Amino acid sequence: MAIIINENSKIIIQGITGKTGRSFANRMQSYQTPLVAGVTPGKGGQSVSGIPVFNFVGEAVSQFDANVSFVSVPAAHVEQAVYEAIDAGIEVIVIYTEGLDPHTSMKIITYAKLHQVTLLGPNSAGIVSPGKANVSDIHDSILTPGNIGIVSRSGTLTYEIVDLLKQHGLGISTIACLGGDPLIGTRHHEVLRDFEDDQETDLVVYLGEIGGEDELFSAEFIKDMQTPVFSYIAGVHAPPGKKMGHAGAIANRGDETAEAKQRVLEEAGAVPLDIILDLISRIQELEETKGLVLG
Figure 1: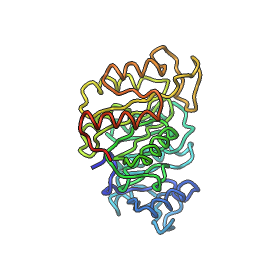
Figure 2: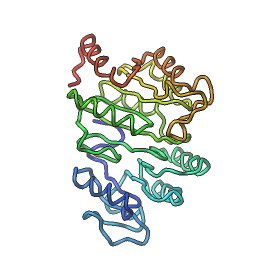
Figure 3: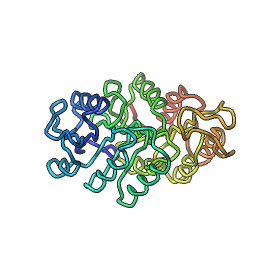
């Protein structure tokens, strides 16, 4: 079944005529992601990889019933692009663009919540349900469909997990990369809830990092989850006050360190991973004790 996006999604790219938009359109076409249209104001009537381009999101929604948008416009135009998509009836939005100021992010996130729109980002690597739909920068060629869900803020860590799982014949139901900025739309616990309800997800890999409170909120939800959760928090060896890559990855308080978060998640029932490579042995242990079939 997957979560958030699937083979029935109808996807558009806002900014499809730009370099990033064209690259994603080409890949989506090559790997049968259900991309139906692109939107670039002033470029209506053109096409990219055989995909029609419209001036306005509303045109794509009217003609194709589009319900998912990948936003790859410059940072200065993201706010207007997101408002337009929401007002046109788009239900899921991935903001791939980075560099938004916090005030703009807050306005966008608030507007999305008011309209019950699922918003990943800003600065999100995207979301993918392998073999069904890919609105992410994780290349289809390295993905295998399966029953392991992944939720993360970091695209880089996600690639490592994907490669590790593939090496051992394990596949993925959905990967959701929520964004590396301090302010993001969809939060970890919301994705965990979706995975808990998904009949095709039998195990979740939760990749956190220092900074912010998302993992602390997630721990409260994990306590009641039936789906097993494996957690890894990046930044165990980061000095206090050290920012790591993402704008949001800086531990400002004692409970925002990797050690503190991993301890809270473990107390909630998650299986802690000291290093990424521990994942496979811990999965094998779970298969033996619980009788799960993940391969």
